[in-house]
Image (cartoon, rainbow, N blue to C red):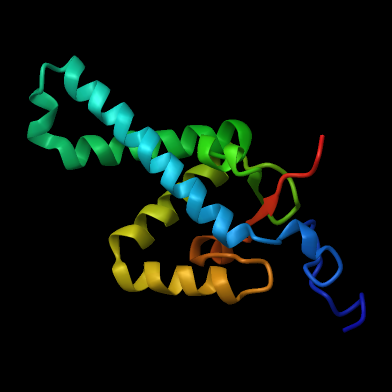
Length: 151
């Protein structure tokens, strides 16, 4: 495909800069595990601070903390703490870090896919099979997870 026929995007071309996408799917999985552990610890702390009354609405508490954790960290650094440990970050279609509204939409898309099992399966399959390793919400928003460049 000639350069003129390629869609214009600020994201690295996976055919020419495959190192930016190498092992991103597995890094994403490990980052997710780290984030779940951190969110669970945060939830446990809140339950303790509420003298265990937080247990009454634990699923909603966990969901709210998880949503805020992901949205705030994506909006501020374009990566959750787990992603930073795994040296990956989300970029928008221009190749720039996510804005607050893009982070909100990405987090919302993530939550919709997590709550709808078939969508989560489609998203995981897309991460494994697409050239840029994009999940469902990534494909809709034009974002992609990249290996963080050396600084």
